[in-house]
Length: 198
Image 1 (cartoon, rainbow, N blue to C red):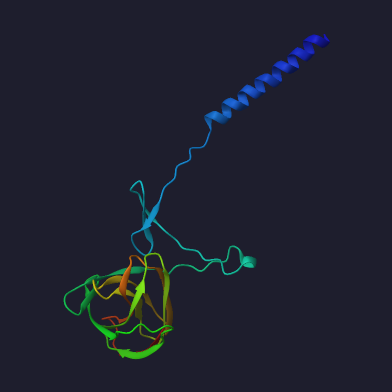
Image 2 (cartoon, rainbow, N blue to C red; image 1 turned 120 degrees about the vertical axis):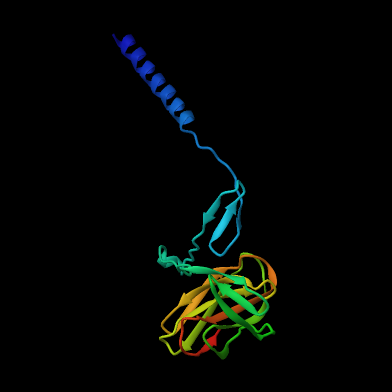
């Protein structure tokens, strides 16, 4: 009886081992290396051709794991619309290069009428660099776009802000020696906006 019991125990252990090995090989993991290249401020393309949405999170400090800085929401594309003009959707804006010198850190003040924009730069930024454009403005009941624009191609990205202050944060979508920080007074506004930009 002891021999049968011992043989049965060995058989059960052997069967469990075989089942475990079979289960491991059946559910084995597939490892694959991919590269991701940014193609916009919040999109990227994988090496196998998939376009993915990226959300950047920055930990504020080690004791606040789970607390993150959210990326700027509602990003719109800025496109060229002719000499000295840019557009967002169907709205066209005059583009004024307010400064042609890179100043760091840069804080400037100015004013911009509805349907107009001011760009400050140029900045030499490489693809993937994290940048921010911050501004305060009056009247505070008027909205503004804050963003970045390539001063050569007149292309870039921006977001609409309200309440008299805002910060646009993004990852630079491509390398250029001619980036500019941008403020736009929307065509729907009724007043000139007086701003401080950094």
